[in-house]
Amino acid sequence: MRDVDVAIVGAGAAGLSLAHRLARTASARRPSVLLLDAPPGPLRPPSRTWCFWEPGPGPYDAALTAVWQRLRVHTPEGRSVEDDMAPLRYKMIRSEDFEAFVARELSHSGQVRRLEATVESVDGIPDGAEIRARTAGGRPLTVRARWVFDSRPLGSLPAARTTLLQHFHGWFVRAARPVFDPDVIDLMDFRIPQPPHGLAFGYVLPTGPQEALVEYTEFSGAALSRTDYEAALHHYTRNVLGLGPFEVISTETGVIPMTDAPFARRTAPSVFRIGAAGGATRPSTGYTFAAVQRQTRAVAAALAAGRHPLPPPAHSARSRVMDAVLLRALDSGRVDGAAVFSRLFSHVPAERLLRFLDGRTRLHEDLSIGVRTPVLPMLRSAVDLARLPRRPFPR
Image 1 (cartoon, rainbow, N blue to C red):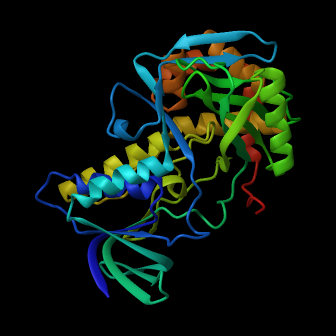
Image 2 (cartoon, rainbow, N blue to C red; image 1 turned 30 degrees about the vertical axis):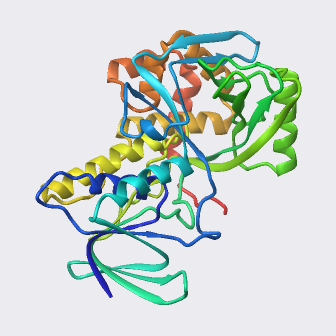
């Protein structure tokens, strides 16, 4: 039996971010913290890349793989739109580098302990919660905590009116000759075949003149087979980008739900969900890392001040409504997703559009961006939402 003030379940982006912030808390109220991480095996997520944007330097700059200030979008017709994001910077961090960075920080703090264990249950009890787990060696473990923050992926998605999947497969490539501009990312490249519903695009993050992460990304109702992803990437790298000879250094694959489902941030009086399980993923884009930072920053500040640490909503109510309308418009086929995003990036400054995608714009800015979309199909999609039932997403 172990008693702690705070238990964090899961050591992905959300769990590590919260542990890191609590370890750096400069307050007389410094809670004891236990970070429970699954042992190596199927419960640990695979290595992945997280991207986000923020103005100027940030707390994780020492762990970044690369930083850019210019982005480019290619329309389906082949026209290129390039813009400067200043004062924002687009940042890329690999999960293994983020974990190593946080581990170094935690090693200097006696406040956060880390333990490998498979969590089997989290239950509310009077004045706290009880975690039942099993260590890597199979020994039963019980932890009682005043507060528990659970970042484990959900077993199933909440019922929703619309759920699409953002699914992708990427290659870290090294070309035989300089073919990339290290100063510019290709955020969306629509010069590839589009699915009947949703959209597909290429995504290029160059880390040098000959190195880049090249991904095929699709928003649709179901993921593809590995063979289909590979075929799409071969087409994109050879026929669209014209890379010539290259080698694939490593790969990454992922599936991110894009849903208008409501996510519970609290499952018991002292048990909270954080990260994607707590609704941090932006439904219209799939970006999660920046919202995780806002969420964990608020939790750490509340604990330091002795306030109730319920995580705040990751995205505003207005943002969630706009996302629900866009998802419905894409899923119904009323709008051409590639055309919508191409038009937005062609007519809205990149910095304002990125703030919009992060839910950081004001109402008048949202309205000015909204008129750049197909207004009537969007309005019809908004009307749809009032009568659509919420249904479970098939697993």
